[in-house]
Length: 257
Image (cartoon, rainbow, N blue to C red; front, side):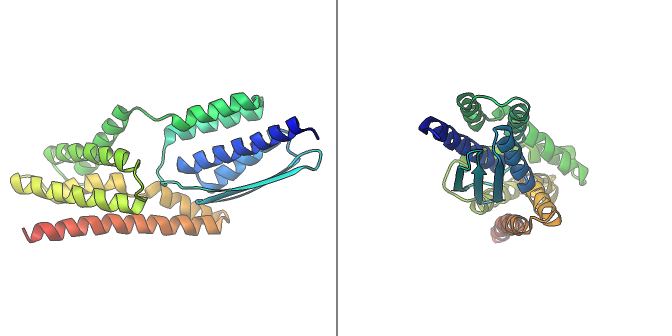
């Protein structure tokens, strides 16, 4: 086997690891990540591909026709957030490669493009505001409660976007956001007694609950990915505990003011 062919195999392994890391970062379930990487490996003429994925680690071992075996493990640092925008792009890329494999340099360029892509910020703000307004009104709040919840939802989105770029982990981010949101909503409802603090908080809390991650954790356990499911479930419980702690501290602080 010449050096050029070996470099191509190494580049393919790197691309597969990058795709897997991006899928996990977008909130994809473990079974989806493993299945996608296996299909891509077969599309690029791998004789055998063994993949092991948990939320924090991806390990891939590829066997090529000349019995060359390449193995690499990558540590994944993911926020656990869900990004359907990039997830759909990655799914489309993997499907197109399975039908007709792209040259590795083009595949590399497509992966890099997806990695830096983000949904428009305006869509995030408007979607969060609409969701918070809907939940607040649905659970019994007034239209004005919904409007205040929508305003705080945009603040929450702003904090999520900017705190996500720091070194804080997801539990710390949830704690900070819930604490600031609780204090802000409490201050507004004291200035405007006609508003209902509990209804406003319900609308905003729904934006922070890791519902999809928790669903994926249970699904992973049911389909046999026990380690991945338990790890993700533990993360979800810690995130939920941080949310509860932040709101509880804010309510206690307001009660003494």
